[in-house]
Length: 124
Image 1 (cartoon, rainbow, N blue to C red):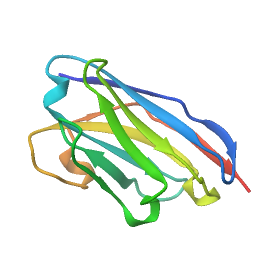
Image 2 (image 1 turned 180 degrees about the vertical axis):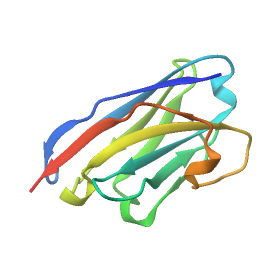
Image 3 (image 1 turned 90 degrees about the vertical axis):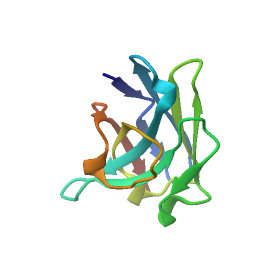
């Protein structure tokens, strides 16, 4: 069992930066892949990116490549989402999620554990 808590959301102007954190509790977090997702009002939850258990492999959706960076500190049981050059279309509730296993996946249904989400609002 893994519990996830996101933090770091807020209001930022376009072009600004935020760093989201996903703090995990539970055993063996360093064996889990962690994904970041977001959900804007009236839209489906969408994949943003993910990082493997060791932190040496990451994937990103095209719309955030070059602007967002995922990293993890397994000693602290924490995964980070650094967001730079933010745009109004990045406004959403951001969720972290975890799944056991090595397989890369961007599908919401394949992640077993979810945080409660943190709001990110980018003003123009």
